Length: 201
Image 1 (tube, one colour):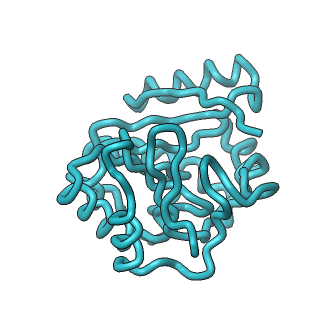
Image 2 (cartoon, one colour; image 1 turned 90 degrees about the vertical axis):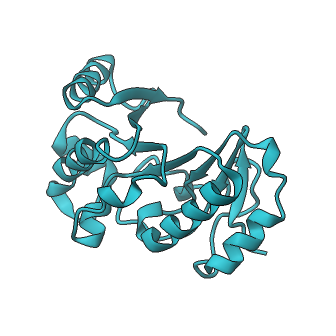
């Protein structure tokens, strides 16, 4: 059976797609098939709403603190399904919802998707990775090229109008302390939270 939902710590993660416009050098899927309490996050097809709903109904939702859209792909690649599932989770379980994203959803859909998260998502966590556009492209290897860095920052700035908590993150040990300070300054300028997340083997 495909793993649409999987547990990491006290949170329930939703794996909707394996599509991603990036090929990040540190991405976990480059060298493993699973994260947390999963077996394999590779999907043989993108799940239908019915399949996702049934997967939720098999869970004891009381054991989870948060529902997180994050799997082996970029969640905004499956934006219509993400919104439908987020609404179902809000209406049925009244739980906080987070989306872990590369922040390139506007480029993926060629429009401003940020208003579409209003009322559905409580936290957006965006991979900042580095304070430098050129280095960002080297690390992230986005199919959208050099415009990706600015597009990601614009997405962060715009989405905070619609989502209460916006976080930009980097991975510890992957950049210098000086670069982390520059990242903190970028976050301060656009009015979002900066988080250094642990590197996971």
